[in-house]
Amino acid sequence: MIKNKIKKLAQLSYTKGELDGKKVKKIANFLSRQDLKEYIKILRELENAKKVTVIVPRLYKDKEFEKQLSGAFDGKKIIFKEEPSLITGLRVENNDLIYELSLKNTLENLNSHING
Amino acid sequence: MVNSDEIIKQLEKGLSSFKLDAKLQNVGEVESNTDGVVVASGLSKAMMGELVSFENGVIGMILNLNEDNVSIILLGDGDGIKEGEKVKATGSMLSINVSEDLIGRVINPLGEPLDGKAKPKNKGKEMPLERIAAGVVEREAVNTPLKTGIKSIDAMFPIGRGQRELIIGDRGLGKTAIAIDTIINQKNNPKEGLKPVICVYVAIGQKQSRIAQVIDKLKETGAIDYSIVMVASASEPAALQYLAPYAGVAIAEYFMEKGQDALVVYDDLTKHAWAYRQISLVLKRPAGREAYPGDIFYLHSRLLERAVKLSKELGEGSITALPIIETQGNDVSAYIPTNVISITDGQIYLEGDLFYSGIRPAINIGTSVSRVGGAAQTPTIKSVVGQMKLELAQYREMASFAQFGSELDAATAAQLDRGRRTTEILKQPQYGSLIEALEYLSIWVITNGFADDIPTEQISRFEKEYHNYIKANYPKLIATLSKGAKPDEETKKQLQKATGEFKKGFSV
Image (cartoon, rainbow over all chains, first blue to last red):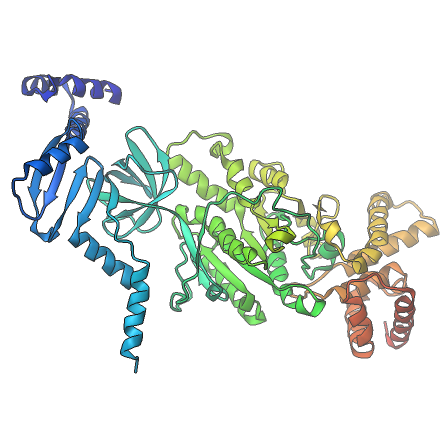
């Protein structure tokens, strides 16, 4: 099946902006193994495009911060994840764009800058 | 012992250029890895020609931007790159770090040393591999000679600094020999009052053994002291072979920007076209004539356009290009040869028949041409070449009639004799480059009839001994002729006297 058709099927798998399990199951039954692979890939891309992952060193509730993030990434679902190795700061993953604002990253960059 | 203050100072110096800004990264995911080409999804902000890095440290360059994915050519070993692996865009285009420390070195197109020595410590300037050539306003006409030291070329097809002169011919006819002789001859520039020339020899898709021979010869003759050898041998990935000439010209541009003169030899562009064809086919670009992609002309035209003579305001630097093309069965009308012939400012055509009949360099005088070099020729050599060209043209015409065996009148026989001797004196052994004064002497002695009584087979011995005699007994004459001015009557008289003296002592 050509890629465009699979893409269309993936877009039709949503009901009111949410992935519909029933539709996915029905479509998946008709697809060959290779087409299914492509279908899953496109679904994953569509899902990734709808969410923004914010990685912080320690999870805590800050409504103001969440509001600011929602404003920055309009209409996207914000998911928080904990990663203590960041030390401080945060990393924002918006699909294929990553905003590195952590101390860990700064230290790594400093290291590579000094050691060439 | 290093002073502690010194250590702190160095650290501070290093830190001053460190940017603390937040970093935006554009990442992608490897979808497939076949034949040196990686297809990756994501990388939505990536640019054409941008460098990307893989998790294992290998770098690649983006050559195709599609709706959902990008195609990346690998510039290193891609065996360990797996599906699903992360790939990061670096935000920078491919460049090579160039400094004076590169002179005398053997490097690959990424600037990594291949001669077993350490990487140059001096942090030079990053020169982009792809750059738009200088425009018309920045250029000036070719006006300074780039002497090859080869009589027939310097006399009949002179090359100027900033020119693009193609060397074309079948395999094994001495194309590389001409280029190497030209590089070696650049050591004579200070003697002739000319600016030194930095030479870049770019070996593309060649056998390692042949490249080693060239490097040895450059070292043996001392030419390596002003040369840089760029190697992308036949065993390197096609991507590196494709990039090699661009890296070579990027190095030359560094020196050109400093007002220096540079010479780049591309040995050879046929293999460069093959490497690009391979990449294009793997990237699934539409194939055209001989399976070459549609932009094969642009591949070479944008490279050779970077050969330039800069204007006075920009420092008068220059890049002279000597591209080499290998033909199959003397076929200059094939796709790549015709492309490069039309791009360059002339060609030196080497022919098998001439080579095997002992005429070396085997330059076909009828089909070779230099379109702009004449303006760069010195008055010295110019004053003697006109007559020789005329005599050679008459000889070629008559020789074709004379082969029918009919009886010839005395004048025609004399013309044929002169032609034979001129052809003989234009022969020159490999690595036997001559300074311009000696080239002048050889041509002058023939065109003025001083060698008419010398048997043809003795001409080369006559020439050699004549050169030695003048160098030993009339060094002032050599110095006068080396100045580049048109020889005056006094000089000509002295030459006649000296030649007469030499001939008295020359036994046939």
